[in-house]
Image (tube, rainbow, N blue to C red; front, side, top):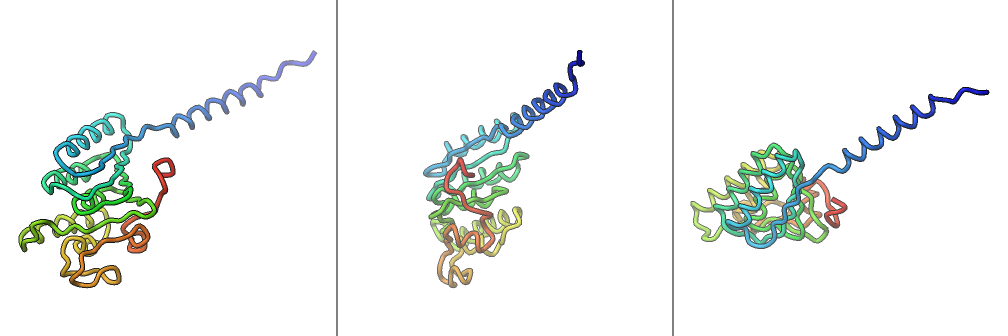
Length: 196
């Protein structure tokens, strides 16, 4: 009578354990934050709650962004929270991040754009010299913090600067998804959240 092989069961058990651990790692939570429409007090509160949840769960954040802009005071507060978050924040522009929305997009560690999306057009209203200078500095500092071009970010706010070849001086900068990648602003594109 032959002895029962025990080695095979140990290998099988180890393989099963490894697979379970790998699947657990792959199933890590991601906190999804949809910011659609105007940036205001409600979106600022939503982001604050979501970032707190992400920190509790030690989960990365995906900011699903579609905004024409909004209130600058709320956008700068949201920008500050994104920059201060210990969790990784990926911004998915789907399909636009204009004005204050562009500031949020610049604040994320990773910037991914959907095909056909656009970013920029952030000239403040009213476009006084003081307001343009303040917002231009905020955009440039945010881009610099994330190792992006501060000149590119400033040109989204101040049309006197231009950013050849995408915007001549006198034209406010707005980029398509492909232009944003070519200019080094966005890392890549994704067709939908599942792909991202």
